[in-house]
Image (cartoon, rainbow, N blue to C red; front, top):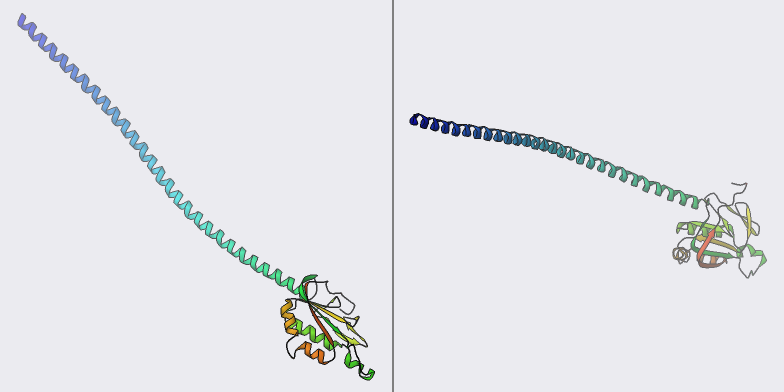
Length: 235
């Protein structure tokens, strides 16, 4: 009987150990499976995040390309607008110059005043007309001033334009129908040095006028103000 009981004890011990091993093996397998499931889910999430990141990077790259293209278009538009602005500014400036040349606007600036006066001494009344200022003398001065870059001209304060006319009428001259008596002050806006030099050239306008017994005085002015052209019924 003792021997049988000993076998039972051994068998019981073996069953206990086997049960423990099975329990441990089951628990270990369960934990490993859980860990593997967690790891698989994490990997799946990481994969999804990576895919989203790649998509975002690709989209960002496309947006950058679109942005660069838009910036280039904007740059081109700005360049065209700048060219148009320069052209517009040039047209405005040209229009202002044309208005100035034809006497439509009031102008001021540096320039000179040329005074033409009759001779102070007339030896013979018979030849008196040879010692007074005529329209051709005034026209010579005006033409030389225009050729030398004068921007605006007036005679005794009366602005002249491309349509102006000057004629003699006895002892006076008429400028666009308005009579003026000597002395005649011709005001011109422009570079004083250039205008003065042009008139004083040897054998030039001043010498010609002096030879015709006209008294000529030239003075530089820091500022000359000329009103717009006075319109008459002759316009």
